[in-house]
Length: 329
Image (cartoon, rainbow, N blue to C red; front, side):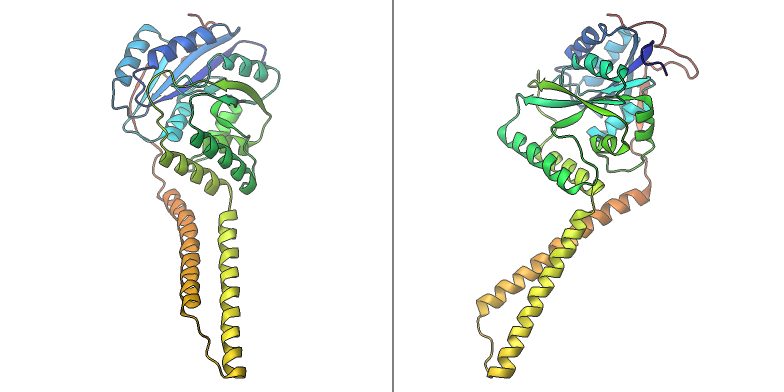
């Protein structure tokens, strides 16, 4: 398509318990996006089973703005699945993804659109400064991205999140990937295409607390590593081989002493340590294999990623609502 002409921009906003900020999020988005020339606007809010009044507030926003679409999931399926649901319901020529907490600046979407018009297929946000995050979270993120790139066959850009803008062909390629354990930023990197960074300073949350606990961060990191690398399996094999070599050396040592010197090997402490070491290695190897096996089992069940409770504001099939004019306030 002609990237310099009129285009429909869909913005996907996964939301979970964001009643304190969702109104301000919508106003910031409209204020930023109305400045982009030659775009129609579609805002796809995905309510990921919120337990507060987020969905009711979104209904009110949609009643006052017919560019708003709402996808309400039947329960909380998690951020990566909610993001995928939004992509599946977005109809734009270009699709941006941004969280509802306003830590990622909506104003950066204009630069992403400019990069797309200049030829990029993906413009992804890079956090040059991370305000409002604890030292432990920053250290974990810093270490994870670098470990991920050491292990993965497909490098993932450092210090990125899911904040990005994608051409329609990239979105279609992403949605053709059906895996259950989803690590979207890695999946986008895996698709290839021309991808360019857009640097920004990440702000602290406007209100409320982070929805990503340390446990959720660890699970997301595990999904990223295990979905894009078999190196942990190889490391487990190498560790098992090394333990076997050490055990064999110990056996040879004991036999040599017994047969050639007529001396029994002494040292119960050393024997106890060796047993614990071998047992720990075996459990570690089984755990790594179990992680991969569990993911394979989840894929084989072929369950839907999510269920939709209701959709609001979507035009009837076959219409082209949202493409008739540029974004306005």
